Image (cartoon, rainbow, N blue to C red; front, side, top):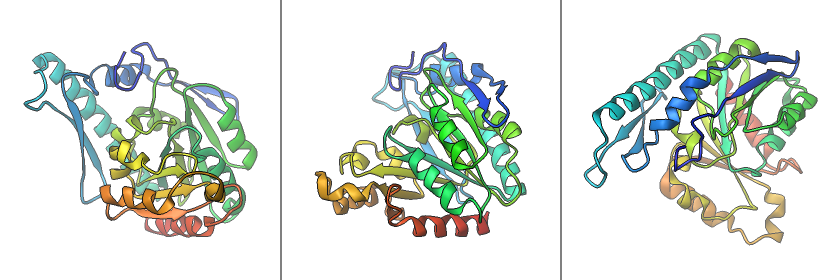
Length: 287
């Protein structure tokens, strides 16, 4: 088991097309091997580089304050991460060719990611084609919510895995068939650590932070917020009732990522969502 993220070496991800009820074959081996050494507890840590074309590259770093890992493990790490990066690059190339806007939607459990998607589908689904890849450790619950809202959806269950990877996306897209000039939202597993470390081939990364969380969350989980293109501060309808300083939360996020865009929204009331929809439309035009 990976001591940082809790992924079990025996995790067996599964997927289901909720329109057809058809199960989808996923290669669990690549996921298991990624976590056996990619996070390499006690041997190093991961660094992510964002290139000028929007691609991201993650690599293992073994600094002077870490015990040296056996060369064989370093080689395995390098090959695993290189394989994920290569698959992500393939995904990105196909998505760009089809002009599909792929959004990696991330955030903690309960931040309101699924509620945001439901509202988005119902509000703008008639104007923009939306497809969803729904990631959870277990159940079809969120995928069924998305299907009921009106969007084609693939549900991926990662078992004890804590994030989606590029291989899962590649296999799921073959079944999901996002159409040309559409938006595909990948709702990652609820987690503020590992989803930020693995490139899927997405164009943009959106982090949902809710008013029911601490306003210091960006400082506690810096990699997630450094990786974000957009932060959606959700559940602002609850601000009068919770101890959450929205100004401080936004300042904390921008202290890590000065260029990040931030929008205040409520998936329940719809406040601020027109700005989110305008952002999606602009990103789709540029896809």
